[in-house]
Length: 446
Image 1 (cartoon, rainbow, N blue to C red):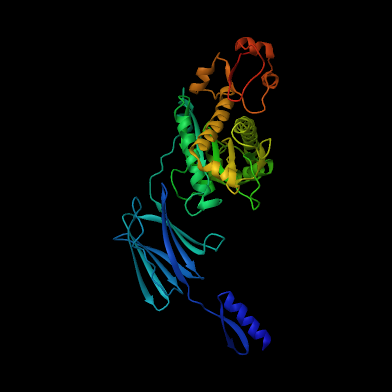
Image 2 (image 1 turned 90 degrees about the vertical axis):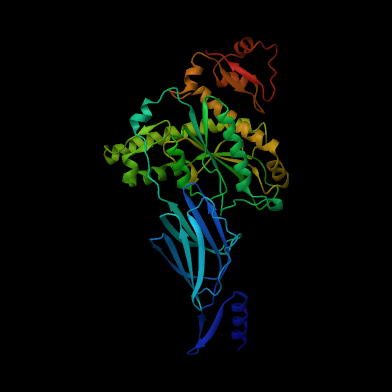
């Protein structure tokens, strides 16, 4: 009996009910509740989230004339409030709820037009309870551009896809005073986009423009759809120890690249037409072995570009923030796994560190961090302008511009460009080899 009392106490603490059947304890069904409902609008879909206390079973089906989506949820005893929801710019006109029985709820979404629904449940985590997620994808005609159209482009701008990490249901890391990573990195990303747009040689593309969730594959697909030359994902780090600090730059690891190449080769649609911004790699007519070699070469070149550009970015970031690591790190981040677009993931600081969280809040720090990222990428492309771009035309016969970062010396800069210090000093009319952070130095051709 003592065991039974202890077990019943544990069950009550866990929110479970049991009854005796044939001398055995059997779990009883505990009615669940919908605690809240949230809606998020993304450019091509609307996400509806039901926060559920307990476990549920559900089914979803569509009806026409007029367009509706019906969600039947078993084991629910309450009707959630939906009057506060904003359906602006979404396909939803109204949500209706009704109890079909004592423990079954019907939710009807009245729709303006047909949608493609997807639905799934998510288990509780440290931020949310159990959730039922309904994604409503807009039905639009896809318009693709051919390789010939890409090849005909000339004097084009270099396209930089800027991805603000997390968003919507995924707030990312949490800092003091309800500070959320998703908001901070979107602000930095918008500043970075403006810097690229203000330069006649570049075009910035925001992958996530507002507070909504995007899957990692979707982020890289948006970059590819916009023919991006480069993909940069902006984040803010976090750790259990608030003393952890510093900014970091990541590129894809060799192991991650190998697994991604295998995934692409396994999918016929990727083989048939793999198009990035600066590349046009068609594998459809190649046998599997040759396709594998071509894709491996493409990813090798992409990773090399990522690492070299990342080194420039890291050097510039060192003038703004303390660096967590002194070199570009490599990891298998899913968002970096695009075989044809050089990619970087940038941790702009630790949101879990009180000092860096205060910095990340300020417009001044956000602007300086965005400027450092811009300068690093610009410095790489000034040295390696893609053929057919405006920058390649501008840089023809012109000296390179180098922005001095913290820790730089004139001798190291000269060594990097394989040119003598004396020549750099003469070209820039420098009376001393002393340089300062942020100084612009012209590097003459050898």
